[in-house]
Length: 255
Ligand SMILES: C[S@@+](CC[C@H](N)C(=O)[O-])C[C@H]1O[C@@H](n2cnc3c(N)ncnc32)[C@H](O)[C@@H]1O
Ligand SMILES: *[C@@H]1O[C@H](CO)[C@@H](O)[C@H](O)[C@H]1NC(C)=O
Image 1: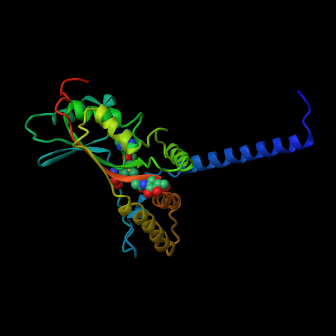
Image 2: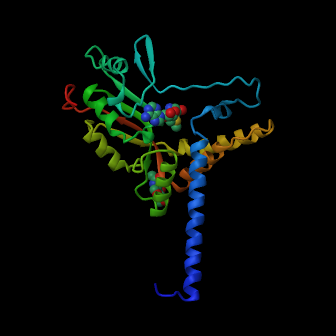
Image 3: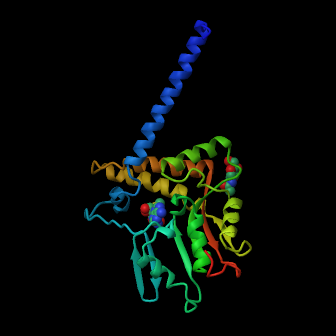
């Protein structure tokens, strides 16, 4: 190998040092986000009404439910992959695909961007198998955001354990719904960002201040608060309500 000039060596050392530092930061951030377990038991800190009157832990772990008039059944399963559901879960869900019910709805609150491999399997299952409309709260990528912001958003998704291509633009989202059996004309995506991000980040800040009197710190949720603040400020993603209605030709028997 040709000997490097001392300037070249310094540049190489600088670039190497920079890459090493970047790697260390990425590993620390990744393991921090993973170990802070965004949906772990620490959520009581966000539910605690200030000032504290009790320290009763109000927790809930519920994955999805099937609602029939007068009954709510809870099942624990991977909602993203209907193919993996056990027979009991599957037959309970499929019992809803019955003409007795004039309308069926899949309700997904703030969870679809986590779905692996993608939102497709559950949308297809709901539209084609159950002929169920869908309503969801979800995050949609702003197609006009800068490339830098889009890349940062992708990194945030990966750190949250989401598929790398989980954030879609509104057009991509609608295309996906249509491919899964929903009707383009009667499906809507409504931007409600102004009612979401600044409110959540403001709430996390005030909760952090209130809990500090008890020497409790929000820990990882502070980072979540910064993220919501960034979403609101940069508009890199939009907080949206998705309503999708099945197409007449989305048939009950296929798939
Ligand atoms: C941001 S939280 C929202 C929780 C709640 N829906 C709400 O609106 O307060 C996302 C939730 O989605 C759940 N989740 C993510 N992927 C899932 C999957 N494949 N099946 C079922 N639940 C999932 C997580 O466990 C977590 O509780
Ligand atoms: C999308 O991002 C651009 C550039 O930051 C911004 O001007 C625009 O308001 C954003 N659109 C929405 C709907 O948030």
